[in-house]
Image 1 (cartoon, rainbow, N blue to C red):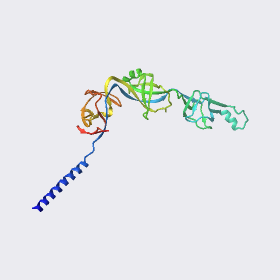
Image 2 (image 1 turned 30 degrees about the vertical axis):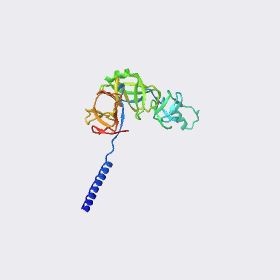
Image 3 (image 1 turned 45 degrees about the vertical axis):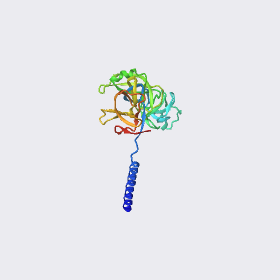
Image 4 (image 1 turned 90 degrees about the vertical axis):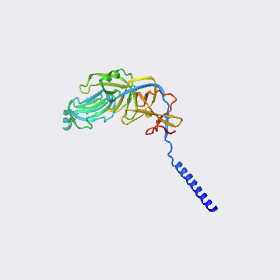
Length: 302
């Protein structure tokens, strides 16, 4: 009898230990809680903008041409050089002077030599004659001088935006390296392209900076604005594949993420106005880590 009792007790103990090990193993394999970052909504003013492509242009270009036909005897400039008004760029020797030189007839060193001087200050963006000895006809281009301080941002804007641009005292110009510059309205051309129905509008940078010609930029036009509205970061707004439903995830009971459908108002690249529901400044909203989380998910706040 005692032997049978001991065998039963051993079986019971082994069963209890195996259950305990199974529970411990299951507990150790439980998935860790998702880690999220939360923010609070803020009340403020939100500006909505439209984006239009623009380009860097230089308005003042001077084409240096040959005043006579002859042989280029000196080239004193290179492509990209910055020159000052009055500096000598080229020298041209007349055909008659060249003929006398070839005949070994002694003449003054400057006989038949015409010097070409820069008529404006700027940089050389086109160099048509790069070396001496070539023949050039009268009126042919030698180089082009761009007045570097006469830089503008050119926008070909749809006509419906022209009034907004004309009234814009300051606009933001975003460069391709994500750097933003401030510019002011300069002038609008009184003509509209017959095909695209766009109007050419020019802006000047508020702080001059040398930028490469033809650089593509992005113009942000303020279209609407609202004051005293509830604002959250755009990263906190989630949507479906068709982008016709939007929601946020709020934290309740310190660690439970709950889906809350929303109605959006104005928005820009970084912020969104929340029209419905009415949020509180103390609400905890998931900004990062909420994508793909099901409703009522237990999370860990970073």
